View 1: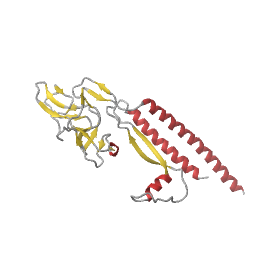
View 2: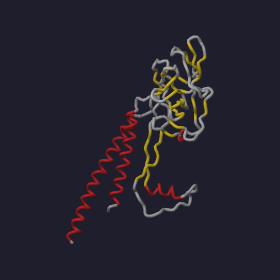
View 3: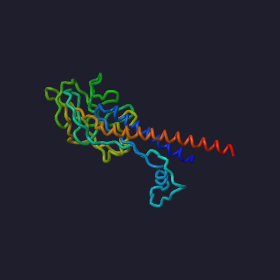
View 4: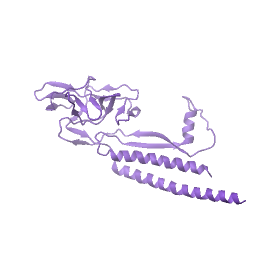
Length: 251
């Protein structure tokens, strides 16, 4: 009977993690370039089988009895493009199609879809709270002023037509292998970033998050109900065990 405690507890922990992910998605509804995440889990037996084999898992065998204890599986990121929002601000940019802006942070180069930039004290293009924006040449972009003109490929010019640099738009062979850093930006995950020669960049626009609020509300309600049901059954298990212990003690 005690097996039920482990199953219920793992299920409740799993629903708690799912609620955390949903809450984070809803919090970032208005964050430019944010990509929605989806939490998935699987039973411990499935996790165990996948880890028994080395590289060839075809001969994996079940160890022990079946188990329905849930364990975290993966956190999937939805990389589909969000809608474009016109801001009219000279330092706002949005990537059309695949690709990421490269940011030189204190921890190295990281990547983002957020193109809401500003200028630091040295006149360099900067993503606030993170680092310098890198151009197509892999170097920071320095602007003399924010009075600029930008074409559809991300080439930046002064009002007089002097070339200032090109925004770097970088792509990867497999976005699913990207890793989300603690800063909220993406890490290459061992992949080589390839700069696009002719990127498509929308000037004075930002890409909104691709969070679907209705879907997130539905996921939140489902997880909350599952969590509440688990708590109620857990109380029932506790009452049954208490009664069983009491009856055994009287024998």
